[in-house]
Image (cartoon, rainbow, N blue to C red):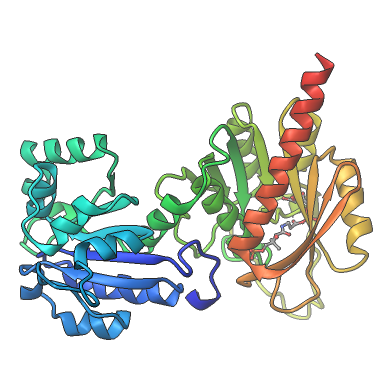
Length: 417
Ligand code: PMT
């Protein structure tokens, strides 16, 4: 995905990247590059040990700012380096964070530029540990991490896999995407913290025979974006998704993969009871084959064509609308003509609180694109047009509208009781 065209909280932020002496330091170059592509102004601070693995020149070139590693460096005039950088910082990330740096900070040691700067920084500081599995599991490292967590520092869990030291296990630096998502998360207001949001995404697939199927062009991007942003905003999120090529939106979003509409219905119903909000961005097949052929259908000589005998799939959203109680139920409508009229009809028929109307005739929006342009319609008939924007941003606007619906619905209920 083009990161320049990406909705982000990192734009125009002053980000301090601390690099300690671990083999994963080379991966930090990609992190710095991604941060600058997202519009952040990045300042890199390296320990002496880090410079055994990577050079300051690399990071100076990528960030466009001088790299600091000298404890007694002055930034400009008589400004003391670690203090003036701390003063302008919006967030600091230490990647890789070694057992040594974690241990030093946990025990109040500030003997180089990086550790001194950490002590002088009051904005959020994210540690991204990377080390040998045995070191990670050691009681001393874990005690130090717990101490720092209690003091308000943020930590990511290392990923598992092959380690540079030959071991296999937990200790790898998380992916750049996961680090960026955590950084975005830190900047995001947790305004959906009391909501349990069930989201569906992607296409459903109905088999004709073992080879062929009926499906649609949904890539899952819209639903995955809503799941990611809702979790970022503090909601407890469950995602039920048809088969897509996308990686799960976040490690802390339980993601249930389904194939058919019947499987989607079953998974949705299982999680519906505890949800406060349901958002159905999935494109569900309305029909399935009456009987599925166990063997591949063969072409017969002289045959003009074949007829598929289809039966209706359950309308999951209609069933949710019927049984919603106090829940907020939001649907999507993908339309090729009379957008508002057809979407409003679905909103009313399925007893929804809001519908997101998608005009699928325009190129570059809707199915499989990175952007979308939609109209939100609520149950009072009020509409809001959302211009063409990255799907993450559209997701955030949809969630703002959901928040307004929640507020209104709960207020009405409170007044009634
Ligand atoms: O996944 P992307 O590539 O990012 O594309 C996003 C999208 C275009 C798929 C998405 O934004 C969208 O519009 N999803 C709804 C598509 C659709 O199936 O619309 P519909 O008008 O057929 O269905 C209306 C609503 O009823 C939808 O919320 C759908 O999930 C639900 N439905 C439909 C049929 C059915 N049997 N059960 C359902 O629950």
